[in-house]
Length: 387
Ligand code: BGC
Image (cartoon, rainbow, N blue to C red; front, side):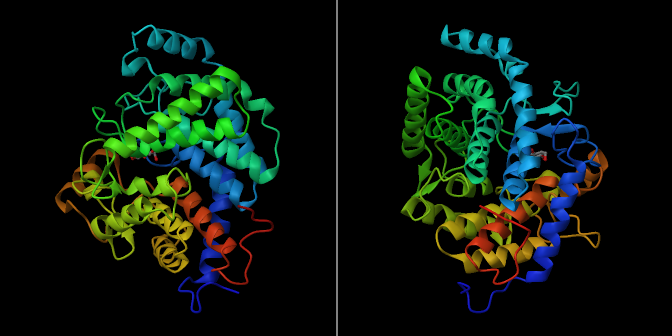
């Protein structure tokens, strides 16, 4: 039986968009396994991000596409193992009390053949390295896969994160490198815990990962919570749309806890206008619009807390942002925080990134989640969707 008596979701439309998104991602995935963030957008073309890619793989995996997600994780492993010496050097230097500068750390994005980019970018971001581990373990559990082929890459990632997690770095939005971001900490913690849980790492390395994950939990509790909710970075009271991910799908904060409830509530009250979620107050990127991926993350958090009805409303809104060609954008301009800034970005980089593969993957991910909660009623989303 469906959870809601009158699901607001337009079932056929969601199924159509999920199927379109799956095909789009499948077609655009490169032979190496990389997922282009947005094939046509000037500033992103040619690059695959660990953050976007991991969530895209998670969506593909949840939709039942084991092959695509496995190929992506293979690409990640290649990127990491081909840099084993460099990662070992970062770890040794850090342990010796000489943490390398941000520009010597691993970048946020790579070319499809796994090289560092040549364009200037806000590259030092730690979240994607936690997220890929978390998504890999979730994928393996979902499809009953042996994790042995990923062990070396996982060990390198864990060593890198265990010695670096406390450092300030750029956030999900590639901004504010002077802060330690709570969403970033959540991604790192989720990755470390997943690697331990799955037995990907053992012995001293696992002990260190457990200790780091506990320490992250302590830092979040002490300095990343204000007024009962998670905060954008340490020691402030503001929030960020990415915080919903700490609740779900990452599961770092128990979805039924007061902390999760207060965080979801703060995101609803401070960043959500009707059903579209802003990144944060003060956002000026393309005028600071509403991001489909963030409505999906909020929907996942609601679903995990048992509020599938609100999640379905959010999913419906995400579907409404599709272009006539069914492509989903990075953000929409129905409600802008800083309308005067929009044109400046259009002049600089062109119109908003569309399609954004991460947007498509998040629609799929939330649709599958609601499908599993049976809110989407009878119509299966794909041949064999699994969570
Ligand atoms: C977003 C990042 C994203 C990148 C590629 C940036 O504008 O802030 O979160 O990884 O685009 O999609």
